[in-house]
Image 1 (cartoon, rainbow, N blue to C red):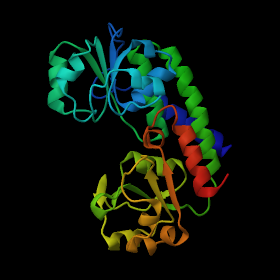
Image 2: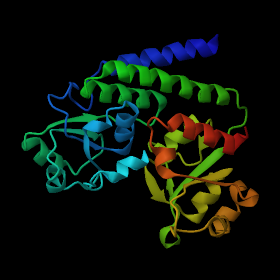
Image 3: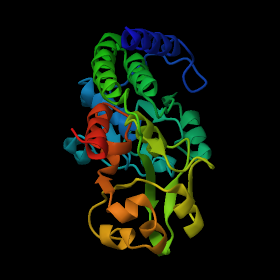
Image 4: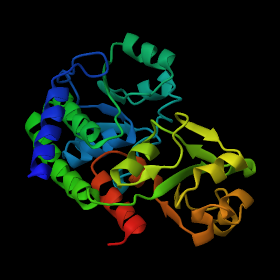
Length: 289
């Protein structure tokens, strides 16, 4: 009964959010989205999941899934856009995830007469459903978006039910990089922080927002049970053995137990159609199937 009540409250919150202005503006169906540029990997994944990918004429560098998206022209990284690159593909509409930029580039694109709208980023289950509905609204396919949102809501709630009664929650340290021997780790307000919570675990770092380099003392004090990292492939930073042998990490429960999990970054941190599957996989790794 309690689970059903929580589910009803969750859906009510999401439905209310869907009626609010998005990114400081009311989302509206694009007048012409026949040549659409989507900025933000999660938005692009949603467009494919809605079966509306025939509109896409370009991608940004965060759009890596599904594999066929890599066949589209690359117009740059979402936080370092160049107006010339976007305009070179002749877009009629631009759908942008919150946090893209720089602002000067977006102002140029808006001034060029391209119909562009911003979708809010949210590192939570309701945030994912809001993005789906926002994309559906902009593309004029709200019924498709509603059906996808309901499907994703069911999958996300199933994962939430799995972790609802965990008595002792694992402390997880998300390590972004180990460049220069410095461990850059996630605090609050990040995609990593959000996915740790969805998996029924606790972020080991809560005294700052964003990502920062940790001192050895901070790593030891964080006392993570598990270290979580992106699996970037190739030669990117320390190996598992090197990281676990770090003098500070070695003094933590994660270091002593060699508890380190790597997952594909876009899959783990995307907060889109695949997030429920990614979180379920993380739950399995943390607590067993």
